[in-house]
Length: 545
Image (tube, rainbow, N blue to C red; front, side):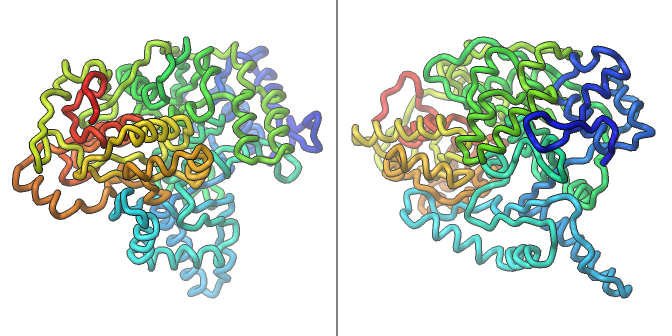
């Protein structure tokens, strides 16, 4: 840690590094023009970079140059079980090598705080219509992964600086958002921004809190764990101005599918997106998280929202200590990370997207950016003639209907909407078609809590959307086996079968080997399609039941 530009943080007992002073000392007034991403990296450089090279590094940010590598020292490493485990296996191997040479293996530990979240892929062998699905799926997962879980349990005792979140709690993206990220750290008497690398492409989920979080591979994560800098060039930073407000009844899923189509066309590959404007201000943290989560589907690297009152409200709602929430506010307003201070930021490229233009959407088939307004289903050849032959599955049969984890279940509005639709369907006596394998796989236990509080969990269970696990499921190709009778009919009749899920990936063959094509939709629409039983149903015009 450096000493220059270290100053007391007013209103706290902590110090902070005044990156604004460092930048303006080089080019007066330059700080006001810097985007959010550059400000966070500037602070990181002022606090950790070689003082002899600091000015050169900062000039890359100031002049928007991409000529010189500069170091980034993430504050944390967050891993899901699969890639995170490989990094820890490497460290265990290093311990063996050190021991063989007469050294002390206990000295081999991550230097940077490392969090390993065990839940990731869970196979939905038992659907949400089985009242014991959660316990049964969990038992299968524990049996299949006994060796892996044994090693992970060993790491809890063997390594210092490693925190393990045991299975059954949820996936890294959502837990990171709800619990783990402090947004602003307070360590060794210094306040500084939370930043991290994570071993999953959807790590940018927590960008919604103003936390730079990048998905990386296991080797990169391991390198950061050991205290090495992650070297980078200044990325392309694109401002995305959100104007207007979403219309009543429009869910975050509708917004994010429209944004995915828009941003893909704008070719934002490998860029850092920064959302701002009146539209961004109007979005709840849950809505922002849904947008940030889809970063890899845009082709981008990060999708940032600056810290504002919505951020503070969310931190309070999710149980962060009042003192911590106050620190976030004080630091953000002092250090230039508060949204209002970004109004003078200058972006090399600015895109504009009007939230008021968003309609109900699905995406597909085959690609998350293949958006279709639900009013255009017939024109696009997705809906059509609905077959109702007694005892037979119809053309376009929905064999998988899944409310899946990270993109949508971090957003209460999305799942509550599904619960309300389920309640109305139950009142009318509507049921899930018997060939539909339905499931609800929340990203964390918070989902179960708010559904119970709203008296809607039972409504979803009645329609076959009981909780099957707190994990990634269908998006990861973990839909599990079909009922043998259903599978046989699919094969023998060579049916065009489909999947509808509230996730982020719908590539052909990914969701289930017997689902010919897959579509992305809001949780509420997933419920509706489970009742309809076929993608040929015109969800806007046809009559359910």
